Length: 456
Image (cartoon, rainbow, N blue to C red; front, top):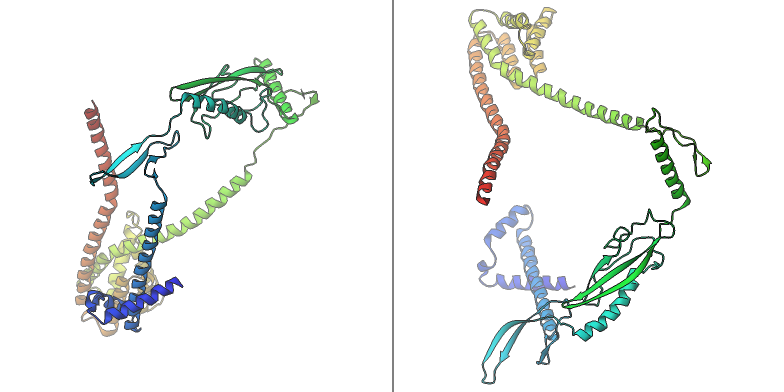
């Protein structure tokens, strides 16, 4: 309902502004942006909705600001630091100072503002003595809360360093730190059954006030369950047998513990499931890596074929210009690859495709169809264009074959230069991060001795 009220108010303001000098409030750029955002819709209506929402948001924020201002004003009037214009209530002990911003009016009519602080309340010796008597009872009940009894302590004690509602800080000392530590930790695992009495000292302090309160606690050994007792007896028996047979080749295990005969069996960790899981994970990784490797090989093949393309076209230009037919020139290029294949480490993908094309022609496939298949197998724009060029010249005659091949050779050479430049830029980008890391390491090596010199 309130939001609807703001929208109505925003609509009224929009209609009012349209009737006056609206260029100061309604920007032309906003209308252009609305038309771009909502093409095909009523731009005037969308612009009106935009401004109504805009004005409604402004009024909503302003209304919230008014409410907050009223709340602050009321709160300031209700909270009075200076009570009845005469005194200031101090913070209790530990509450710190209270900062006061006050206005002072003099009898002659002058006035000034002043900032000052009022310290926290301190207690008199008599008040502290009374609080100390209360704190002793409080701390005793705190330490022995939860059913713990002073004459039968078997677990850690909670020794507080302060008490809520009291101004004292409390420090603890123990008569025997080997049994009870200053933080209440109890070391009673090796105690005899009768236990031992330890005096604990609580030191209460507040400014110059200091009092000491001592009370005894009877530390007893912990109570163990039957399972815990049997487990400890088993460990002790194993330790005794191990010590007795320390000079022997074999360590004999106890056959009786706590009056009961025991038998021993080795517990082996079954890691077959983990191995199977690792094998499954490894197989899945290899499965996806194989796909990645296959795709990488395809990319490498395309890259090699792209690099080899200018060489293929230039050799065709050379052989055709020397008077050879396209078929013989093609076979010459493929046969040269076969002769050099043993010494050439490259795969020679394109030469293998050309060699396969020769086999197709020898097996009865027409020359034009073999070239078309070659272009489809390569699947690259350059080789498809070359195959199309060869097929068209076979159909229309070889009058312009050499000229077109030379033009294609020039285009291929230009593309090769551009590809080489692109690879150089990519290599420079890849080297940027290692160079930055090396630069950072050099800066660290330079700055550390420099800082050491400044410190000296």
